[in-house]
Image (cartoon, rainbow, N blue to C red; front, side):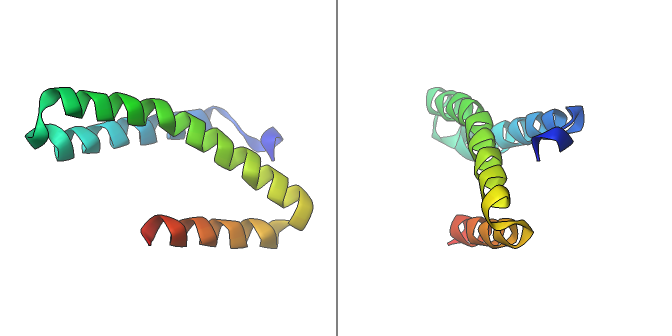
Length: 83
């Protein structure tokens, strides 16, 4: 799986971090600047770590269970994030 990663993946992760930061600023701006800055910086720093952990998990699951395992894992993550 890691041989398929390219610069577009890094650009996508960076774009997601920027969008996350903008949304966080918008949602938390009414609660104070210091709290908004702290949440934005913490979220921006945590996002690449979460992305790398997810990539390693997907690669490990793909190696063990194949494509169906990755599909089940992705569905589980989506369900967990919205519940």
